[in-house]
Length: 148
Image (cartoon, rainbow, N blue to C red):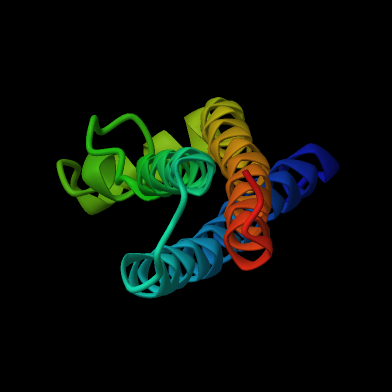
């Protein structure tokens, strides 16, 4: 195996590992966002909230729902058949070997674009989660303090 082939194989494994790490982080954040939504809904519906608390808390909840949507979009399977299992499911064993030998660099580029797209969704979801959580805390402070 040449140095170029070894480097391509290592790059391919690195990109796949990065996708796995991003998917793991996405799954954990999705569980966290779901728990925060459920907890905020449970607590919020039993409290006498003022109009400002409703508005601030409602915006926070909407941001968390949008964050959950981004996370779900990030984990949505790509079934177009360009990379990975869907493509390989249509090929014979010999065709898979030929495709991998010929198209490893192309696969690395495609998987890298997929990893960046997943990471971008995750990053935006984290930002929305932080903002939504801060708004929920502000709504709780407004309610606890009786402000406005």
